[in-house]
Image 1 (cartoon, rainbow, N blue to C red):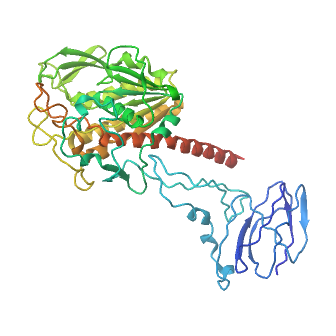
Image 2: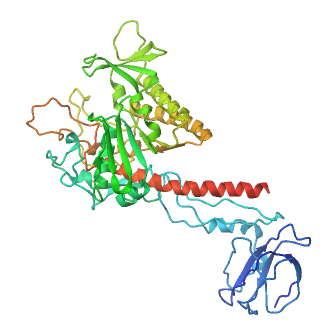
Image 3: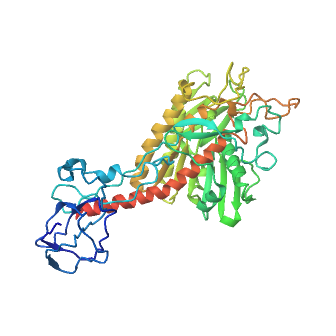
Length: 509
């Protein structure tokens, strides 16, 4: 039996529950408000086996009270998390090192993995009391981090989740099943992040999250490839109606009327103001004038209409281009013209993203989220795209089998650097920038391209082997897995921001 006498100030009743078993020690840290003139705080190490607690015993409250000795009641008061440590009766708890108990609640937080581009679901918020004489010290919750973009491709026998006969949105050149691709194993893989799981895309959940929202895909034909993949995944629930304001196929709008959700695509392969200067050019793919400090107003004038912008660009920057800045030629990439400085493809790529991000951050009417979908690598082997190069592999790489390097890595890093700089500016404005980092996952999928299966073998067309776009169904469907998980994690972000704000206010008191 233990009897105690102390002065305590409390404003709320606390019901005392009995310990889990007679052979249990209870460790509790008591901390009381500074408003009580005689408060104190200490650790109590209590042997409760010879005692009987009554569940109806209640702590007095209102003013400061003097608690008298009692042989039957031990009042354990915890302002936040009560730590219960079950130790065999014979263990000398009184000699237990106190520093080992200081952060015991952190070590008991949940260790189950989850999937997030930013972090896993947070553990329950808690107040963890220290050993020193601080009245209250709040610790932020322990969150298990997981990078959903780092991992491996593993088998998924349940895939695909649609076919070319169940979805009409597949572009002909990516309709690999229709045009006789003989190996279909490329569809039966899913992305497995290191240390957590990435759920398969749930179309009903996505549509609910997008209720009363607008989403735009801004970029080239790979951006359109992504949008059509998403439309096919959503087709398991509902099809949209065409609400395009123009007959131009480069500017499409689709509405999911039951959800008041609108999805749009803007064809802008360079993202900025562009003019075709020569349809042929040095490589017969055109010579383009890129105005590196001017906007493509076809989409930037409409950006404020959207809640989400998915920005992407890539392969078009390999085409011969003339660079204009301040309305004057500042150089070119592979233009083969005299008296014009030959710059790298990375120069124009960097400048284009910088201009776009600046426009987004300076648009006072845009309140949405900007998502950068990172560079999508091509997989031409045994030759360039116009010199017989092809992509005939039939399975993914493992992460230790192939490393991205050279121009692909340089373009990717250029994007990331410009994104990080823009993100810092956006934070000051209260705007949201997010990274849909698909590059590493797609680098490991040389088997997912149409190759020659984007048309009939005997078709009278002049098309190169396509090792840039992605078959539908195919690996690109995983981009929607990523996207949905990112959207779900926005709820976690809001939770964390609110919690951190609360912690800062408590610390300031």
